[in-house]
Length: 266
Image (tube, rainbow, N blue to C red; front, side, top):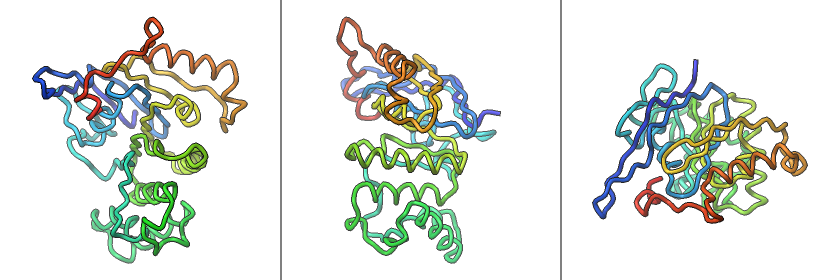
């Protein structure tokens, strides 16, 4: 049985100018449990809208999303999201940030402390449990956000360009860290990115989104770990070329976003 199913999902928005924006157009796909899926596309073409519909943060205009046998109609504890923006609460210590979702789900104090301690240690921040977010680097704050997601034990991890604001070396470290966590938990991951290299480092499967449609669905057969030598193989180079072709190079020029409204929400 698929873990996540999109059934003919469309999502429309009314632009401030009055015309209708089709952010997603009849998207159907199935994702098995434990798969690492990267959603790749240019800004404004619907990749974040796809993630928000799965998260229950955006209602589709048509179709439905299923997680297992449950229809998605709102946010739920079976899905947890890491955003591009820094979403760690600045007024809470690391410990309290990681416990926050557990407290919201009604987990008792002693049990949530035990669970949070486990994941704070797993992300390598046990010495910083009592620190304020302002005392941490950007990469460390992302680890706090990941620990908070891990603590609630969601079936599906949703990540909206979570490492986009970090420097190259911190991103590579977090790629390795995320892959290690994923390999030990067998969670299903949807990871939105516009970075082709990032997608080829992480993904079992790459979904290419263009003008609200899934225009290609690529299996990534590269061996792991995917170091520079692996990403320089003919197979990796051909995947990169195929992705670039689908992301809208027409006559040497890339296609633009749907419009300003779509860029803001997708």
